[in-house]
Length: 114
Image 1 (tube, rainbow, N blue to C red):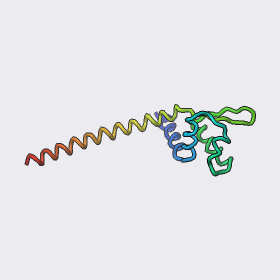
Image 2: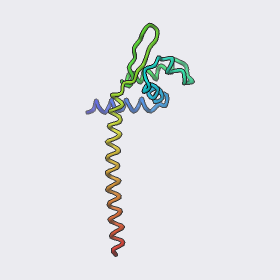
Image 3: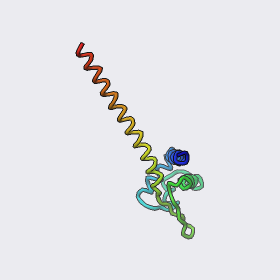
Image 4: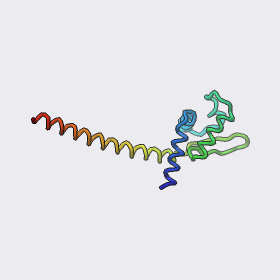
């Protein structure tokens, strides 16, 4: 379980940056080269490739190199783990809110009976 938590932490660390989220969004449309991915961002290429390196290190993207061109593609498995974690939290809070709603309705009914 500690390894799962560490992997989840890495996914959320990678998702914390808007540039990396934008790269993942772009890659959801299909594979792209480093230059294609970097084009919309106003930053030096070495800075941008650090974002790609982090995404690859944490397993969110995979890259292949053909000659001088490195192409990236989405690796969705770690994102699914984060999605599962978020859905579990959502179910927990929905259940708690339903319980609170039931409790408040009961209190209101009790007040009306008096």
